[in-house]
Length: 338
Image 1 (tube, rainbow, N blue to C red):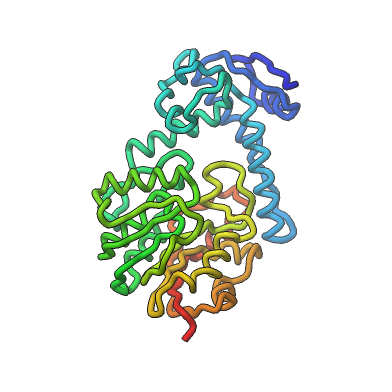
Image 2: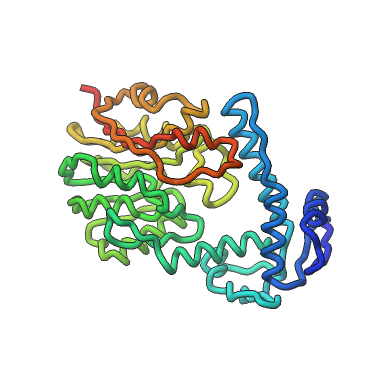
């Protein structure tokens, strides 16, 4: 049975980390703003990850440390009313954000989960401006927001093949499906295996008034039929999924990437083209084979490759900073082997 300790404003970060490592639940009774400061101080104490002998080992160590840190921070919990209100001094109204994220309230929740829902609600309400689309995209909780937009620039600049039909595989927020429509595609089928993503994409399609051009389906990989243009931006790193947002970043054993390439020939018209958008960070870390090798193994031909360097900044304390700084994102133009 879990041990619950009631704590408040006098709790120090060092003591909180010690108790969390003993797997105690720290039930917060103090000021909400002080709880935020406590979490930030705990995170600083848990943020150190050393470099290992190889990039791959460093990556796995980093992932393990990140998961461990998330677990320890989740030990700081708060009482939640059935309507998702918090009876803490200076607590904000988190009810609508939590209803959208979790549906039904538990009587006690990790404060980190509530903060995640609150941040996601702000993104959903405010939206993310996408310059190449000329509109905003509104991400939902657990759906990856298009804040890194270099890959969108690649889709905007790629030679347009004038497709009659197009598929967007793993649509997420629906941003790529919307871009295909903006570029001229009038019949787009956007699919995703995650129900949250399907709901999110449908919401964005409706907001943009593109319901006549885009159909969003709950589907693993491909819908029925073939398309003249197939676009896929799979998760870029092999790794286990332990949180809702992880599914947009980590692809266990490259399941989606390999599955997309192996079944693409059956869903691409004879003269059709596929756009695979992927980073080479996994290759630089020694986590998977080179993308061109995977394409060739699937019996497909690379017609062209468009590239861009990321614009995001790396943190000085990131043990993988030098590899992230050298990262290249590519749009691989793929077709049938002639």
